[in-house]
Amino acid sequence: MVLESDKYTYRVLWSDEDEEFVGLCAEFPSLSWLASSPEKALKGIRIVVKDCILDMEKSKEELPLPISSRKYSGKFMVRVPAEVHRHLAIEAAESGVSLNRIASAKLAH
Figure 1: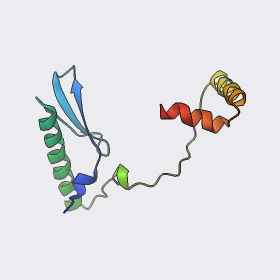
Figure 2 (figure 1 turned 120 degrees about the vertical axis):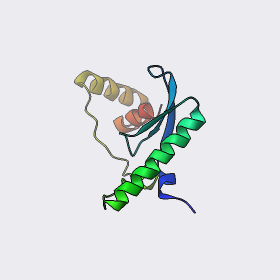
Figure 3 (figure 1 turned 180 degrees about the vertical axis):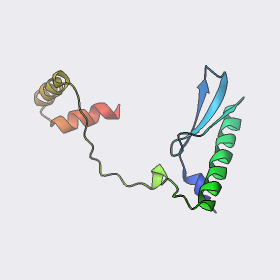
């Protein structure tokens, strides 16, 4: 059985400031857990998220949709300086591809 808390996006990073590993959950950005090992940090943040979900359910708050369950259109708008726009347009023209293709390739790296 997959728990609701298992569907969320977890990360573990080293924190120079805290000199410990920090467990994070993308869908709950205000939550974190510090621990001496990556495994303990992951275990800790998963417990914190699970407890948060239980509290939210008790108070009938809407849970964030897991990133893995969200639908994406593939479209978003990005504002860049005019000189960057011009540079990308020139690169696209010289490569014989669309500006969209150039921007997408650069974002993928």
